[in-house]
Length: 411
Image 1: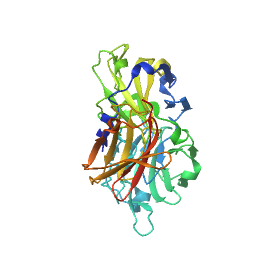
Image 2: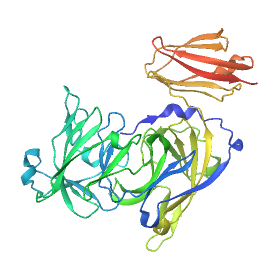
Image 3: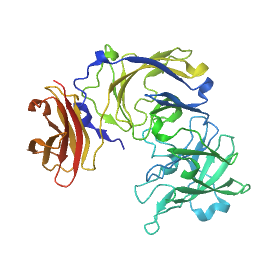
Image 4: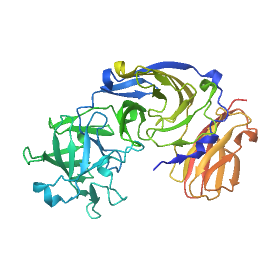
């Protein structure tokens, strides 16, 4: 399910683009899109890996139990109709149904297709007593090595996060059980495994270091293999199309969503039957990173299967979006340093009244106001308080929790 963040629309209304510099860059997946390129908007390419020989992708971050087929290169996962783990020795593949990853969320993998929500994770069910997840389905996977394997995700031990997996050829030979866990992939959001080579594959950088991955994947709408940019966990994106000049787009009035293929492959199209690739030159994409920065991306070219290179211009528009406590989220002051039109923007999840207090750096209370807030986006015109030059601490409190932001006045 897409999560929408409308409160960010108000944060960006007055960005001064003339002060920003645009950087031209590229990311190359190589001939025939062989590699996955992990990209940081701050630091450029931070990893270039061949994942096409992997079969399954495990998520380890937080409470996820996501298991994904490494799709795009011909791998395929199937769910047998007669499905019971007691049938391991005599699994009937007649009429088995293909299952696919969702291209909208990292959590909705092919092995999670039949999930109905906690405690059901598709491939298994959560145990309320020991908090582990136990597999209750069998799968068949057509591997990167072009063989068929039957697969049983037997268990996810949640602490530490370790999957126990049993797999074999369809005739029962090469029966193997392996443990694959977060300790095998320190700091990475995902680990990879090859059933043909029995190999754990470290095929991405530390999760907090990348924003986008340029790679091949199956498009959900028709399960067609495409190439494009997928956003990382905790990265949100937005897009504007039909612009006369995308380089002047400030990102004002947008919503930011968790859809990992919101950028995806939409910025290019192929002219059949012989080409060329056509770039959507009237579109601008916006990325809210894990570090609280907002970048604008304008795509400028694509090298096709010969090089797999995506060309784009990127511009840092805004920094300093701060995450605060559970009830008062996504608080920011913009512009900061302050101006007469500066606003404090925050999202109140409870909808209770909010106390806003401003302290100078000596701890003296300068201003205090109680604001009747609604559930969702709220704004406070802090720039109209005519504060003296200096640095201040702004505290927001709903009566139970308090969050703080720094505010600088220079005018």
